[in-house]
Amino acid sequence: MSSPVNLLLDLGTNLTWLNCRKIRLLTSLHAVSCKSSTCKSIPGNGCDVKNTCLYTQPRPLGTNPAVATGRVVQDNATIFTTTVGKPISIAPSRRFTFSCAVEKYLQGMAPPIAGVVALSPGEFPFWRQIASAYNVIPKFALCLPSTSRGLGYFYIGTHSFGGSNPVPMTLTPLKIDSGKYLISLTSIYVDGVPLTLDPSLLEGGASPVRWFHTPYYKPISTMLLLSLLR
Image 1 (tube, rainbow, N blue to C red):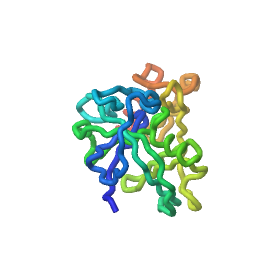
Image 2 (image 1 turned 60 degrees about the horizontal axis):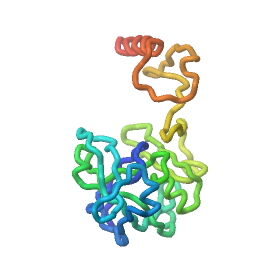
Image 3 (image 1 turned 45 degrees about the vertical axis):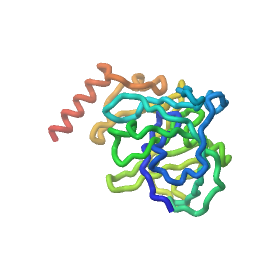
Image 4 (image 1 turned 90 degrees about the vertical axis):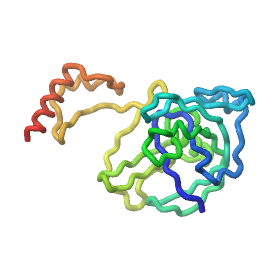
């Protein structure tokens, strides 16, 4: 049995990329041709002098903003089906498309990381490849632990999360807009206290927040100050 490796889950990466030298059980690894339909369908694709498909993607983390570039490859993947986080059976292996990244692109990330699992809304993220290969519901869920010592879970293609013993959870759905995930903002809490905001400020669906406008900033700054004085 091979040793487990740690991978970073990233909602913005289009294609999973791994440090293939750290993963020993890549028994049928082969490169994807630059002229193939697979290569042409991958955002950020390119070619090298050997006509091998390349993948270029900005790194999700790290102090160095350089992009990660690696060969696009395919190998067979074996997936365990689970219930309540415990493996119960092995699904037949399927071909999986990913990229072999150079180890230097992993520097600066939380160690020990051996790669990045792509979870974007694109065509080749990990969850969509799994859903297509095994004909399951094309959806996934990230269950974050409620305590610093708890375990998180990652589910693909299931109606219910937690099996026969579901745990209490708060759902935050992700909306897909222009190839990105967005969260619909319905309220803002500071230290467990809801902010008093004009409801019209939260209307209009999800949108990326890059700065706080005055109607947001004043209530938030006031509540933060009050929480510090308690």
